[in-house]
Image 1 (cartoon, helix red, strand yellow):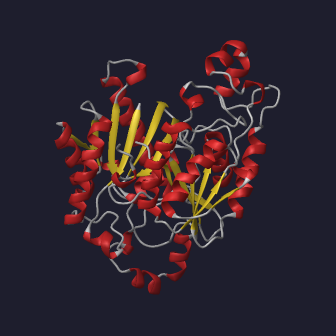
Image 2: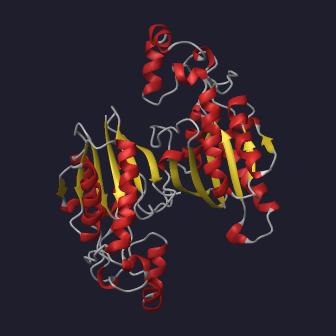
Image 3: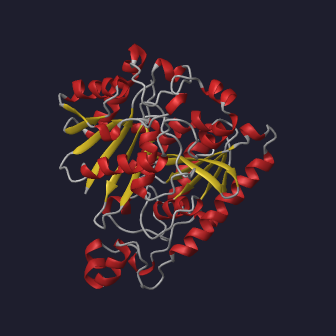
Amino acid sequence: MQVYVIRHGQTEWNALGLLQGASEVPLAPEGLRQAEATAEAMATLVGPDVTVVSSPLSRANETAQALARRVGVEVAVDDRLRERAYGVWEGITPQERASKWPAELEAWHTHGEPNIPGFESHNLVRQRMIAALEDWADAVREQNTRGADADGTLAVFTHGSASRVGLQGILGIPLSHRTLGNLGNAAWSRLTRRERGDWTLERHHLTVETVVTT
Amino acid sequence: MSSLVLWRHSATGFNRERRLQGSLDVPLGDEGRAQARDAARLLVDQYGTDVDIVSSPLQRAVSSARELAALTQQDLTVDQAFTQRSYGEWEGLTHDEVAAGWPEQYAARQRGEDPAIEGWGLAADVSARVKRGLEELADRSRTVVVVSHGSAIQLGLFGLLELPLQSRILGRLPHAAWSEVMRVESGAWHLVAHGRGAV
């Protein structure tokens, strides 16, 4: 089974370098444009039988809708795909973060976990992302009757940190450092899933600009 | 922080016949050169023309690298560190021929293990060689495009990222596609992208 993991398009806060986490921030006009461009490129890759599932946050959901509209399917919502909560760091400037929480920021930059109110731990994010990816992959396989070689396609719309932690989690890569880089806005990765726990990262961080279309 | 782009050579006639090449020096051909040219345009879109180009000594890599060198007006250097692993006595044979002649060893290979055949380049050796070569390029001020081979890049990536050599964590890079790695302040490497240039 082919599983695509896609990050939402750009928001105003992304452009300003602010952490969003659990905050509701809609796509900016540039984000809507990115969502449409990614949807156009992906529509031919995923085909009409794709299952589209999204984080409940509007920036991911709007990005998912762009693809769903093109292929004519509904978007399912799964709360486990929401972004990692950054607690008190959400919506404040990088300067404010650095001046008020220098030690916590250092811990975060070296892939540790900052001790600030409301920060969701690596493990919690990893567990819910793995569960969501495995459960949706199971559901898609069960719906699909075309046999083992073509057991469906899943497109999962989520967020920067949630996707990176989810990818490292599902591939069994420890979170002690950032082995995989983050996805940019409206970028995607593609995985092959053979069985529960048996995944391969085929592509990572593709965008419409990096795909040969000739 | 420096970026390395690991670009796989484009497809040769042997690749299209599903023949193992390894250390055999198979030429690229016109189709392969055209494929390299398309990818080179995309590489320039991504990284600009201000890049260093380092290639495996094998013709299929050098010919791919030349397409990028022509487009960017940059020199290209050749480094033995990025040559392909040896497939020993299987070189020149098709996958079907190998599967028929060495069923057990072929199955071991498909599981990612080193088959016990004459002349085979061991995964650990190839990984260490490519990793060493890549680390030597890490401190350059410009992006470096390294033109190499499927197994060599795969094993070099596993080495840099400290992933198990026999794992199936990363898929095989398609011909003329590339990955990008970056070394961060801690000295660890991370995978910025994998399989760009392909769908």
